[in-house]
Amino acid sequence: MKTFVLLIISVCIAFTGISQNRTTQKNKAKIVVNKQFDFGETYRTYSITQLNFVDAKSKFIKRLGKPKINNLGMMQWTNVSIPEIGEQLTFTLQDGVVEINPEGVTYTVYTNKKLKTKALQNLSATKFRMLSFKITNSENINVIRNNNTEEAGLLFLESLEL
Image (tube, rainbow, N blue to C red; front, side):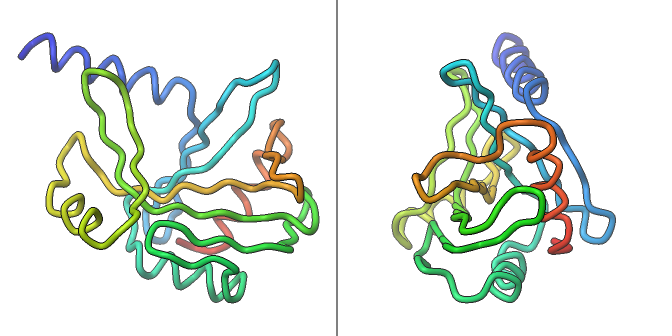
C-alpha cells in the first residue's frame, strides 16, 4: 500500500511538473496546460476539471455556435478565430475520464452512454472527469507551440468564464 501511495504521488508530481495550472476566480475551474514533446517541438493542449460540465459545454456552444461534430465524447468547431493564435482553426473538445494507476495516467473519451454511465459511477480520487481541448489548423496540426500562443489559448478559455 505504501508503494502504491508513493507511486500515485510520483505520477501526480510528474504530471504537475509538465503542466501549468490556472484557476478562474468565478467557478474555480482548473485549467491545465498539457505539454507533449514531439519532433523537437512542444505542443500544448488544455484540460479542465472541477466545473459543471453540462454548463461548460453550453458556454462553448453559446460562444462558438453549433459544433460541426457533436457526440457524446467530442464536440468540434471549425473556422474558429482566436486572437493572437489565428483564423480558420479547429477547436476540439473531448469529454472523458482520467485515471491515475500504477502503469501511468490514461484518458478515456466517452464513446457510448454505457461507458459514460459506468465511468461516472466509478469516480474516485484516482478517477476524475475532465474536458480536454486541442486547437489545430486546417492540416490538423496543433498550433499551440510556444508560450505566446499558450497564453492566448488560456485567455480564450478564461474568457468563457467556466
